[in-house]
Amino acid sequence: ELEEEWGRDLRADVLNALFDRFEDPNPERQLEILSILRQLLAGFLGRGELAAAAMILREMDAALADNASLGEAQRREIGRLFEELGDSVVIEQLVDALDDGNIDPRSDDLALFLSHLPADALRPLVQGASRARTAAVRRSLQAAMGHLAAQYPEPLPELLSDEDAGIAVGTARIVGELRLTELAPR
Image (cartoon, rainbow, N blue to C red):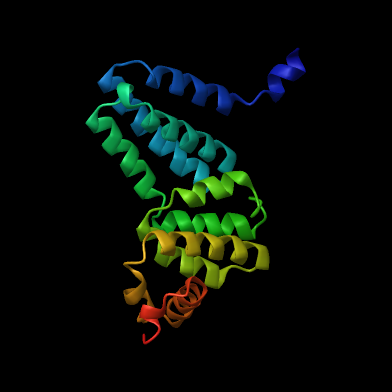
């Protein structure tokens, strides 16, 4: 029993306790817990602990799906949490963790994380894919870039004329794969 207790994943227990308290209809407590979760999410991503980060993302998705329990302020905070995923520092840390082998580029947790990226993440993703050291990491990031560009094509013209040649070339590759003929002249 002692060995079992030492080996137990306390991180999941703490997160589950936070999620349980988040379900209480107390708006101040919900906002406080969201603040804690934002800090934890950044820490997990910085250490390459994508499973724990994905657990937070799944719970926030479920909370958003449950219309009755959240107020507008709580929804905005969850939106901010998702927006911060696209920060260039977060993407850079993710690429480093992928390249170092701390995260499996084929994992469901990575796919979940990449599916939550906002439009602002397109440039850091292109940059990350251009500096990724392994083909598997590049493929994962390029797939995410394609999905993101298909969903948010607005930043593509600006990225095609970026000063950084790696960004322009990576964006041109995405435009070609998506067959966005209206951007071909650029």
